Image (cartoon, rainbow, N blue to C red):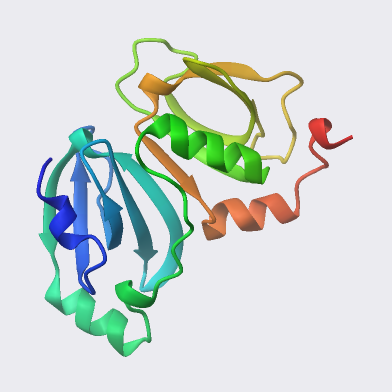
Length: 180
């Protein structure tokens, strides 16, 4: 979807929908270009971390004046939101930056034909390659998988980081086997 750049850095809450019929994302668009869009997202009027979408996957962007008014009233503004300084020239560049931070992330791979890479992945990027990354997953019991698996960059439709879900889960995980 083109035209998202007009919302980048604006102090306006926007509801975004993707072509995979996932629930909409509401938040401030911090940056956008033809490749990716970075959003400071909200859920139930509370900050819900950051999301990077592939811009061509976004099918609608609806400014929401009522949410803007309410979030401003709660002290949140797009112009003063902490920008995480993750480059969004491509999914690959964003992934590499998050990899160097050694933080846990979630990746959505919607519409992928490969069953192993399709769906939701939560864990840590363990290495990056020319066409793929290696990812170490943790399950809902806080157990890390034994070995990383590959995910092609082209299959990643959304990256989330610094979300309350990821941050809270990460505090109570067993030690990542790669941090030994």
